[in-house]
Image (cartoon, rainbow, N blue to C red; front, side, top):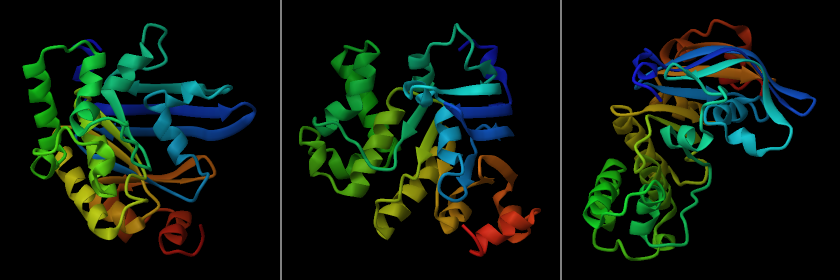
Length: 259
């Protein structure tokens, strides 16, 4: 991504985005701007398009046959991500992703974090050591694992594994981190730790999180988008959305009357 592209005031901009799985239209005319260094939450019932849109931002949907953006544009830091010159691998380095279920590699803790930098060509052991430590510190995991870096990642608790996956994402120096229900498989204590981490990470990254947990959205996000049946019904500051929603549909969803 060029220096000029990085001057955009927004991290992500969607203009009239339609997305389809074959003939099934999953996202309908979505328009939104996501500011840098903010946390944006996507809420809505299952199947409403929120995770589909999230995966559009780093073109993860490219791997699904027949799935594509059929209308509109998505800009990441000023760059149209479907431009033929855009490299999907480089895009996914810049726009990292943390999944619902922690998915550490069957390797050591160290090798999980060093994996991405190695793939990108980093061979210097001292440099890799620095990257690993920085990423683990950034994910609030260093003090817990610094004496067991050569142990299997599978020996970590579920919450630690999820923070390891966040460290692995940060190790390749992204500017945006996408999180698809990152706490849904975690207990309340581990969830609270990841939520604290999200607050810390937004100093250096733009974060978009999909969550079914309404309280989590209020705790971690600056802005919230409410989706229903592929449409972005409302998008506003989280405080306003939950205290004085502008649409009746939004109010009914967040108060539990439907969905």
